[in-house]
Image (cartoon, rainbow, N blue to C red; front, side, top):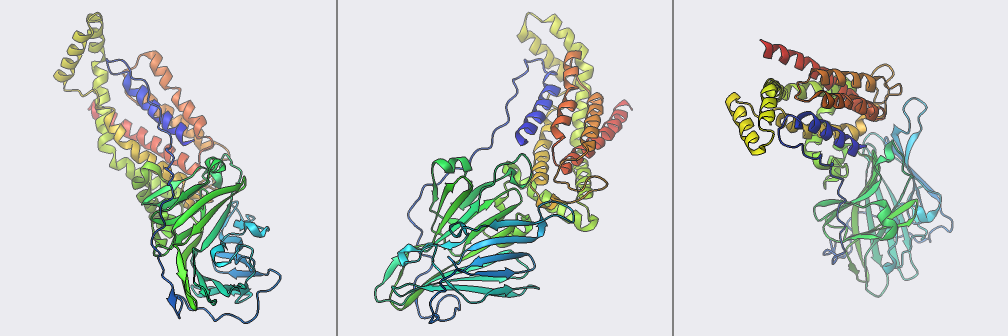
Length: 536
């Protein structure tokens, strides 16, 4: 969808201006495709982020219980202001995670967003697979409590522990906040045996792959990893063929759709490697590997992570640190898109309506670019006035192209007309347009955000196609008002663009259509003003 939009915009600009040149019209350049982020090969593990320490562990945890882990797995429910999570004593894994503030569909009957919902124990998220220490993913743990409830910004914790026959005690401590999506996770190995042990702690993060859909939250669906200072995204189809491994300077590993994500964030270098596989068509698995540690008899060693299950909200992700906000892929236009997102959220505080905020942003951008648009329009008018003389020169020097070019350039110089004056100012605005396009397309703030009347979701298409049709009509009027040097055949071809854009925008998010519609209306008013100013 985005590629079609880029091609259409570039094509319209090329057809509109290229014909005014005496040189042959260049072939339209196809829009560049999205370049897949490069995959990293494994390198030597980073130096251990935590060294084994005698006595006290990095976090306060109770002493090992005398009893063994229960023979049957039990569930532990965690309830906060933002989500409900269900953990299992089997593997100490996460089997269900439900967001309370977000719905699958808009309206009072919408069901809560479910990010994790597994019944098979081997598909739970956050399983521990530290086989070097005798810990398998299906190990049964003792839980410190049967239920955790945290509200009003309070804190709560849940500890799982198990002891192997070799005298190794493994603990997983989850710490929750009542008003945050961030969950702190500590994994600790305590050696109660007589032999030193060396190994790494593995956390298995399994995420479900949903069948691709044409629209909705699954338009974007892929794992990504911040490694060596770059966000690297892996295609799901490629993972069916070959696993991927990252092993240097890893800040976080995530799996995300268009609006929601799960991720594990390193704490002081606690992630040494990330191995991504796709064991089944409907799942991917990320093996989060800690640095290698040696645990002497009577000692313990721990690693800390932050776990995030929640919305891809720019402000919330930025609070997590480690550039987690870059999981939102704004492409090349990120430096423009992010300030626009912040501007929309700022305006929303005062308007209470993201549709109104989009309209205000459109007004502001139109004012900012008014001088450029004025210059572009005046240049096109000047070129239009010279068209009869250019036609005479083409006829006069039709057999001598070099002489014709010299004569035309002299004509431009005499009348102080820049043939690029109508095009370049418009090209400057293209990055801003696409930055706003990305901002509106991937902002969770617009999801289920109502405008007025029949538009109840700015992230969804107009159900009655009213705004795209009006947008097409305003684009047609704008085309008719735009000065052109084209012959009648080329002019008729240009008048087809509003029809093309109308059909293309029928399924676009209504927030984008509103932006384009308002921009067209403002452009028409601007052209009327400039027409009058030039005439005077």
